[in-house]
Image 1: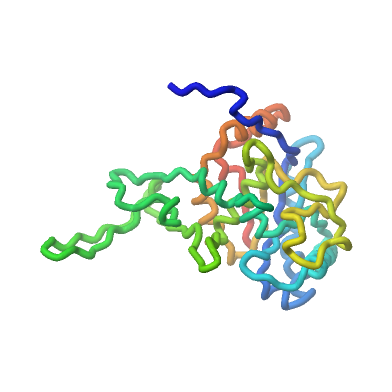
Image 2 (image 1 turned 30 degrees about the horizontal axis):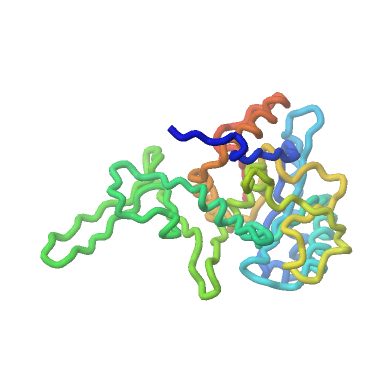
Length: 309
């Protein structure tokens, strides 16, 4: 039995929570290069579904916030002073207001904190039934699976050939849908986190489940669009554009995304199913929901909804 001093357990600070956080899409550099017409076309497709999602919050005074994630991690382009106002203007033509803008780099590192590594440390490998431990854990391999991959058929000298076997999903229903997700790659300049892993961090952030030593990470910083810096590294990880917006973090998230992100979000859910959220944080969010008469699913992924357009 281990005894722990109460003072050694960091207090978990609560965060403000909306009922719903709506992500208004995600674009690549090529989309921005196509100019304002491409941005307007994107928000025109998103707008009807974002409004329907907000209308489904069945409480007396719904708190719904909107957000947009900009990829400054894999490709650096233009500047916040040009990109963010263009997004805000294009969204407005479709009747939408962007409350929060986040940098994808802020899902990897916030100041001196490697927040992606913090989340990675909370991954609990899900061993397939009958596993022999021959496959290294995700913390070593950088790969996370939702089951058991097909064994290699290669055989050493003087040994009998191995028989092929199919991969097998752990929580299989009738037939397997096996997925093996790359969490990071090792580059000459250091570790580069994968898009699905950073998106998983982004979901944890929006669900109010991300803490480091009990403290919230990358809390939104109010900045007017006209006052944004010229360089991405000078922009806070999350910027609050709308001073009247309800909280970025919410009990549930709704994500209106292009169909090209379907495979990525499948990977995101695979990752989140194996992330052990701090029980103190999870319990705090559940208690807050109960105080408002809401019932939240225990599983993180069951609080995330999508619409692919």
